[in-house]
Amino acid sequence: MGSMTAFTRRNVLKGALAAAGAAAVVPAALSTGSTPAHAGVALVRNRLTLPSGIATGDVTADSGVLWSRASGPGRLVAGLLAVDDDGAPLRGGRAFQRVLRGSAASEATDFTSRINAEHLPAGTRFALTLHFEDAEGNAGETAQGSFRTAPGTGLISSGRAARKQSFVWTGDTAGQGWGINEEIGGMRGYAAMHATRPDFFIHSGDTIYADGPIAAQVTEPDGQIWRNLVTEEVSKVAETLNEFRGRHRYNLMDRNVRALYAEVPVIAQWDDHETHNNWYPGEVITDPRYTERRVDVLAARGRQAWQEYQPVSGLSTRIGDGSTGFEPARIYRKISRGPQLDVFCLDMRTFKDPNTDGKETHLTHILGQEQAEWLIREVSKSKATWKVISADLPLGLIVPDGPVNQESLANRDAGAPLGKELEIAGVLSAFKRNRVKNVVWLTADVHYCAAHHYSPERAAFTDFDSFWEFVAGPINAGSFGPGELDGTFGPERVFYKTGAYANQSPRTGENQFFGHVDLNEDDVFTVSLRNANGTVLWNKELQPAR
Image 1 (spheres, rainbow, N blue to C red):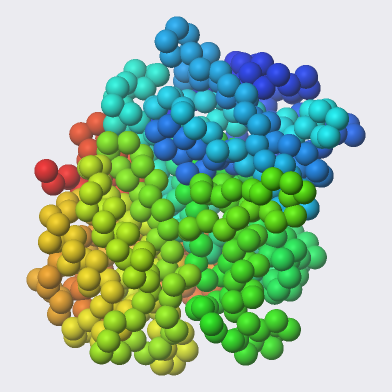
Image 2 (cartoon, rainbow, N blue to C red):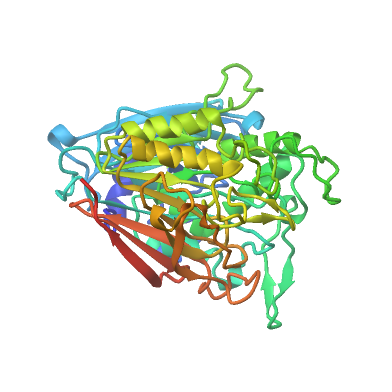
């Protein structure tokens, strides 16, 4: 159980609205488990609305990104109020109340906007309100949310030890034609993650499926009809910027996604399906569904839409007429979660060399030299007890791209590292050389869940310290698996759970997966793999090495 305990929403909303200076009357919010998509939102006639909800992201001990999208031109306004777990404003030296204004929302950013909130107190819960002001200063629809900054060195407001926190991770949303099925409650896996009350959520990639059209109906193997909510943009592969944006707008139509994002900060990554299956820079695809077949063109549009819709840090907006939108930001980054945990988000797509059989005798790239050097440097100097490396592709699982080529770095050769394996071998060897302890790799991508233990005692390449890799997904896509392991780094499959058959739908939730991590006061790292019904399938306690 994470540090997000129940609190009185009436007090939270009352205090936060006062902080934002909002004039709208807000109806009492319903409980999370049964709220409609617009719950917690005050509807104001003829004012700007929030058609995609609200979100927070990349929350550290003293900062976070606040995000929303408007129905038209406006400026984002946030109210922050520090509260205790009962929703009462903190008093005395712990009191904190602030109003922040963000970037202009315009057509250049599909009316998305963000605020980089800085200089926040650590280990503090905030009641959050977000709304947009139009050109005349009129406040529009107001939405409420909350988040907690990462622990600091003292005690958090509830009096519990500052080091305690939890998080969830998964990947693969709305893939293989399985979209929002309101007959089964929508994307219920998000509700299961939300129910664990995590302090943050890592989306490990495939946040959308730009290359997977969603039809109104799909007939499952047993004859049941899966009924999708459908929009124009998801009815074909995404090629235009608006079609890529429409994929993100679609996922945010789901009430479970919106409820989670309003109360749980996200750390977002991208992988291939934000653009096209298994893509790499410079590729020219032969997919007949596309009129634009230059992947670099599609990836630029996909990246712009992803950056507009994910609450990621490091973005800026040019001031003026707003026509340039958000400036590009580096996707790989470190999110510091206090003395207990650093999260290192990788980008295994932007700098990737072409997909081949992976057996080159020279080094080829999946991270690129600059990112590999950054990863070695930042992990090696991290003072956090645990170093979580969030990768958008697995290390030892073979992920084919056709009959010969490989999508990830594993190459079906259990011998010494070759090709892209050489780059990861260099990273692992540097960790050992620099005496880095307590490294855990997390990923999704392969549409089943698994626990892999890597050891030099089983490996062809031995210059590394043993470590764990945990795999979890999909959260609302087809289930597959299992994959074959490559022996170069000595992986052992300790646990796995797959779909009952290839491309099984999310209907039952039994073969949709996410991972949960609980870090207690003693820095014990407890991992559990769960299905979309919240059932714990497997767990493991990792004791920190000192």
